[in-house]
Amino acid sequence: MQLSPVTTKEAASALRNCPLVAVDLGFSNTAKSCGVAHYSEGGTLHTEELTFADAVAAVAGSVRSSRECVLILEAPLSAAFDEKGNPCPRHDIERSDPPRWWSIGAGAAMALAALHFCRRLHDRSPADVRLNLVEGFVTGDKSKDHSTVAGRLVKAFLGEHPAQWFPVACEGQIVSITEWFRAPSGTDCPVILKPKRA
Image 1 (cartoon, rainbow, N blue to C red):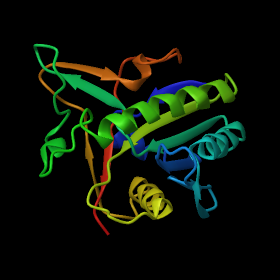
Image 2: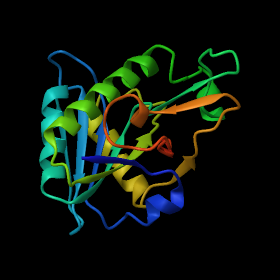
Image 3: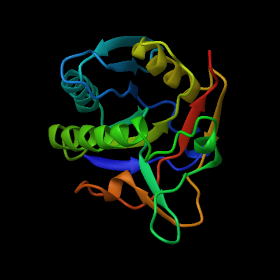
Image 4: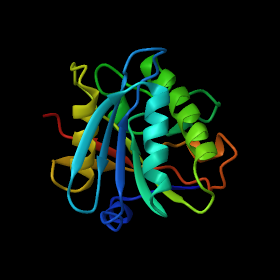
């Protein structure tokens, strides 16, 4: 599998005809903590709540049936460090009140979950598949309905739900998820897609 970060809104728009999967990532031992939304070219959106392992299997199944696919993961897919090497926000959106840095609390746990998710997905996918990666950033939802969040990410990607797009930016060092494991990749960071709260 070739993991290819989508780095701009324009690049994402050019991929709207590809099969699309969004995952509101969770990292629980037994709970169905992951929302998965599959969108096919015919306009069908299917959502489900799955365990972490079942979410990996479901996305691997979607990827296997296509030579190119878009994956939106609602989890930090990059890291940023200041000039001293300390973690810092990747964009002003992480400075919101309360702060939601990639390195704080749930952000750090989800960054680890994303790393493990992508590694397992890489190991289960054919070598000739191209997976275009976008980061989802959803805030303010108190709902445990993870499939709704995943569905909203799909609609935002397709332009059917209001959203903002943010490039990863800081004055220090930026590290992409593609540098964290052995997948053939570059060092570009996936763009951040933030749907408007419902």
